[in-house]
Amino acid sequence: MVQVILRQAVDDLGDIGEVVDVKPGYARNFLIPQGIAYEANAANQKRFEEERRHILDRSARELDRAKAAAERIEGQSVSFTVRAGEEGKLFGSVTASDISEALAEKGLEVDRHLIRLEEPIKQLGVYRVTVRLHAEVRPEVTVWVVAEGDTEG
Image (cartoon, rainbow, N blue to C red):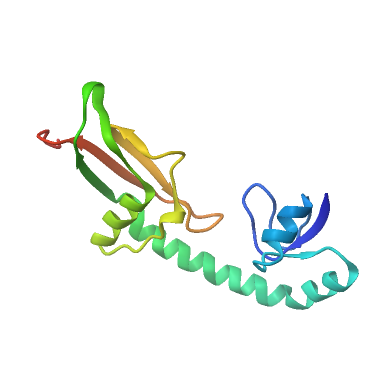
């Protein structure tokens, strides 16, 4: 394990400024090259302290933008009319990309990577899908998956 100083909050890892232990490959191949963290050493600790105010200001602005976007997204619903077989199993699936495109048609630009689906939807039904706009802001969208020929109620 190696220690890194987080420059931004990372789910299931820590908040801005925390020194956390991570696997060397995760630090070397992702966190450090993406600018998410610095290697934890005296020089980088000093460097982070000098940047702290700017990083926290930027984080606060991002939080405000995320809250504003969440107000537009929360409670929205999208529906997909699909072909389904026996017992409501879909021929194909509804993916995060499909949901992102349906939201875009409503004027809500949401990157597909922010839409949290454990796996593509493969059954008819109504689903609550979380959109991760920020570590602290996660509005939900209702996704209706109905069979061709059925009517939404």
